[in-house]
Length: 281
Ligand SMILES: [Cu+2]
Image (tube, rainbow, N blue to C red; front, side, top):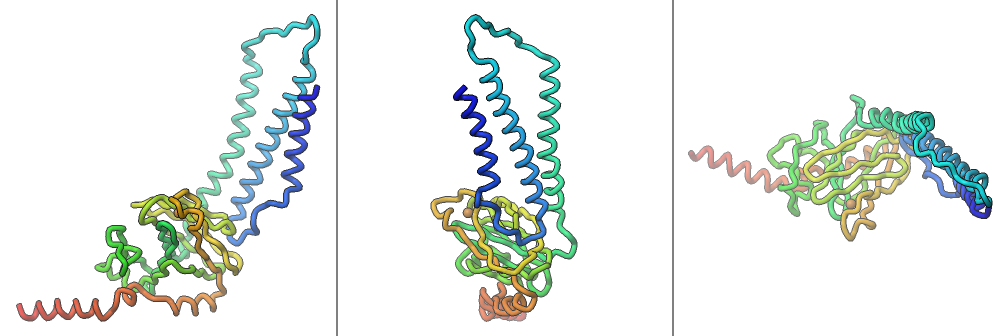
């Protein structure tokens, strides 16, 4: 009897905790309200199943409690019960997975007007790269990383020269403009996560993963690493600021391009020398 009561209290307590808990999602700042809806659907389904199973257990503990002279019947197989339970479980699992797959399909289907932003993770900091005036990111390779070229941008790729490099500093994004986030890691596994955007994805060395989103309100949001990536993992934080179009433009104007960072004088000198050498021959 006491156990049955404890089981009922576990169900009531869990439901009350869910409803009355002060901890809930941080207010959303992107178009991915769908992700919240899928989580709510999962809460409803798992909550209903959890309550039903535990309450049924409490009922059985009480109804079939020990009584002198009463014997349990042995019934190892019940086709009817098994097929019924299989069907209900299948419907429940499908109801949890189907909305997720639908939303996932949208999460990685990038709209044509999205601009690209590259996020580069390394132990333990975030850097960013924006395509310059040409709208194209230059190619990159982790083997090219050095102190002058922290993101490993290919210096021979003309598309990369005007790329805006934001090394270990804040990223700014304009409000209401869809962005495709290209995620790259130059050392170990990391995971780019901004809770307010409801978006996160693993970053795998040697691969470029991506998703897209549209920021829907201005503000300052924290970037977290959501993949255990070494001793500094907990401190691997960054800032994304969503700006009005005007603030964004003025921020962008203050940033340096790859060509500026690698020193135009040096690059120019090399080209001149190469030209001179060609003339002599
Ligand atoms: Cu990390």
